[in-house]
Amino acid sequence: MNASSECLDLIKSFEGCRLVAYPDPGSADGRPWTIGWGTTAGVTEGMTITQEQADQMLADDVAAVARQVNSLLKIKVNQNQFDALVSFAYNAGAGALASSTLLRLLNAGNFGGAADEFPKWVHGGGGSILPGLVRRRAAERSLFMMQVL
Image (cartoon, rainbow, N blue to C red; front, side, top):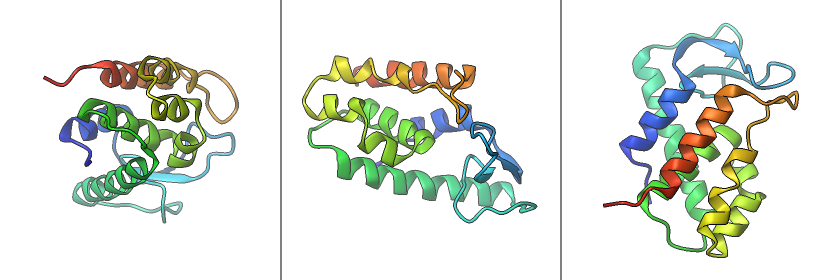
């Protein structure tokens, strides 16, 4: 499966776009450096990009995350479920998804139990609950539970 344009829009709504590199606000030490719509790979302090570069970085990053999510799924999911998982993995990391109870429950066919795991992923690098992550996980959970018409 591939991430939809709705997935990209969801990610954009929570990441925001900055064309100058900035330290990760969710980590304890400000690393990694981040740019664009949340890209971290190869980003260094002082780096600047154009809007077009930011959009392409997001498309490339989301495609890579989608491939990782596809490799972790053992069951069929609908587009909304896939998009929610890609958004989650884009933010928390595919490794976090791979080792999560969320994925274990999902691959066991427990969709409701998997959905109930999203709200548990709301802590920043320092262990505090981040309001932005609370909103993001609620949106991802809602999308995950939405039926495709």
